[in-house]
Image 1 (cartoon, helix red, strand yellow):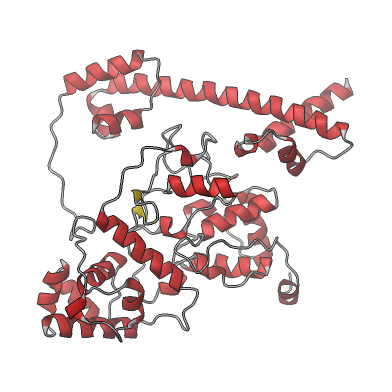
Image 2 (tube, helix red, strand yellow; image 1 turned 120 degrees about the horizontal axis):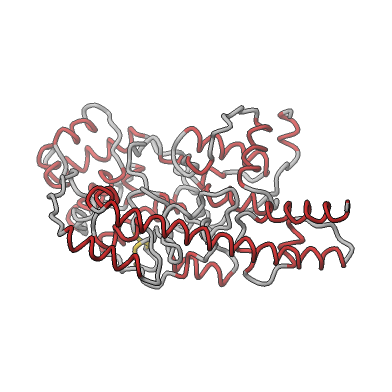
Length: 434
């Protein structure tokens, strides 16, 4: 495909990104999923189309959802540029953290699993705008600054993790494993003031990135940190390091070696200097005064270093008895959920209560298989009914028409819908041949 064609025609739907210029800006992951939905294709098919059109020639084993499309990597930059060309929507890099990659170390913590705010999703569902926020993909953020609750990472229905978007078909806001709405969680614990402050600072950073006159530069950041050290601790790096709760070698690496601070380190500086994160990142100290600074305690949220947890002692006779009771309970639970409830690791369960853990695991697999079969049968009945209605109207059967004929809310269960449709069509063709 020639460069001229890419510049003059929109090969993909010009889907408008959500929330640019606000703390609730959409993530590139969310945009990619919504773009696939707008074409009624899977995210896998969309990625293959982008791959072929841009001539990337990626491996067949490449999974788009295992790559940080919303981060600061070269992959994020490549996808943002590609989708801008193919949709005609400019500045899609505002849906990533690319703006800050010269002033925030790429070694900054990343989320252990996909997260979301249940209340944000619920509000979005009421307005027809369910999407993933970019802030949820920032590892240091553990709370929603708007609702002051901790982000969720476990589906409230199937208790599985990493089910937000790890699938071929993704409808933002619905579990990719069981199809249930992720905003149904009513038990989200309240966030601490430190967690809310961190989320609000990152939100302010994301809101500012679309209005910056130029990209933040490392020189301006480090110059600002040097001025803060001078005005707070008379230029003594060791005193400043103690103030922010880090090793003096870390501060020395920044100021003498030109190293880039991680996001937790930058938040530590901002919290003790009383300076907003966007101003710190851009080196803007024009109106900053240490005498009027508001200090925020973030040590509990941003620990200085990883400390090995004390070895826990468990009463395995008691745990095995509890597992035996669970094996007879009408409520089926997974080994992972059982381990969380008992405050032990899955590996410990299999090591010290292998027979009971294996029994629970087999029971959970059978339960999942039964639920899957019920879901497939329900989807098959739903599709057959919709197909009959579509054909009766003289229309062609396709995914768009199917969704239009589904009852409200039924389209949320996208997993396997094309496979069910293919099975029904093959069955009808066989009957016609007979």
